[in-house]
Image (tube, helix red, strand yellow):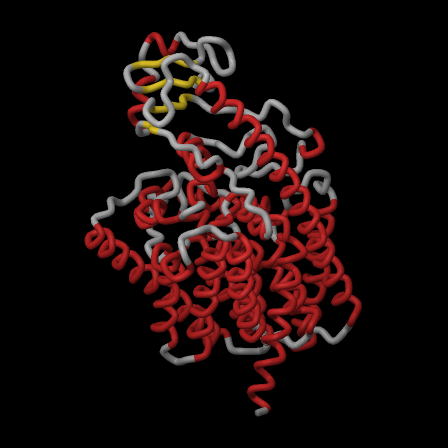
Length: 500
């Protein structure tokens, strides 16, 4: 009974912390259907399954079959909160966190960070999938730590995590490095720590091999072609001699960028808070080293692991050759576990209060950023509705257009001509631009017509539409809404939204 009680109480506390912080931060997107950008193409995810398999995320269709293909924001938030709560609980056990404030801070960082907010803003159909991928990565570390041959079971969970969304492998790598640091601080011998580190490496590599093999098998069985898009596995780094050093530099640069935050008006506050946390953490670490009289080899290994931590926690940037964005950056935020871990080891309250207060301030800034971002997305959603209704009315007014028969071809794209200036500078994210509408590329226009406006239409493929750009009469057309921006060719109406 005592063992059950030891599990129940911290598990319940994890759920309470995560659920409260998730609701406080993301309630706007959780209870409204503001589908924008990529989310428009996954309002019903059935059509997205083959694409995800081609990207190597072959477990997403399986998960969606269980969850349901319709994108229901409150349900996704509920499931994401459950998966994140379990991850927080397991991490607290792995790192032997006993203080309640530590649990609150972990929950806060993981529930409110900018990767989560940007995921909700335009990628809500995948938020629960991201959190399940993270949970599998955390479980992999748990098996590796707790059992002699746990790397075997751990590698299976690494494979499962990769098959949902590849970027959360960084969370597992970051946790392995933190566990090595903790063991050294606790006085474990360097040889024992090195063996555990090698066990962790074996878990990740074996899991990666299982994933790659299973991915190729799934492609062969399903008949789906491997994707060649910018975010596919075909664009992994080739690790050329010169490219390795570039990738290393970009991994460290991206790590620092993510920690600095992307909040408009907080360019000074975030670095200041990080500096406070860093200085206090160094002081705590030096104090622990001196009090516990750690060997020089242990101190050197701790220093090496800390210097390599940005590379490990952001390893996905190192292996990605052509693309990196904030959705891939969740592993970077595991760095906050290090100062929290140090405060658990230090009985003195001074540094502990300063570090906890600084992390709490970062959490508050994250919540403010999320609120401003979601309010802007509300505005973008309403502007998109207005513009698209005007566009459809304009198309239907064209002579010769027959609703449901004439194929609609959009060339170029629309920009938000009335961005709200209060949101300018809110973010310098690659995923965010205050001047864009919710329709951002070819497929999103048709998804908006079908899923938001419930408009019956006929259309041609993106490749066929691209070919039309070469026609002289199309090139000479003005852009919408100028007279002459629509042209009927055969059974299709060309709508030139902008120059390309």
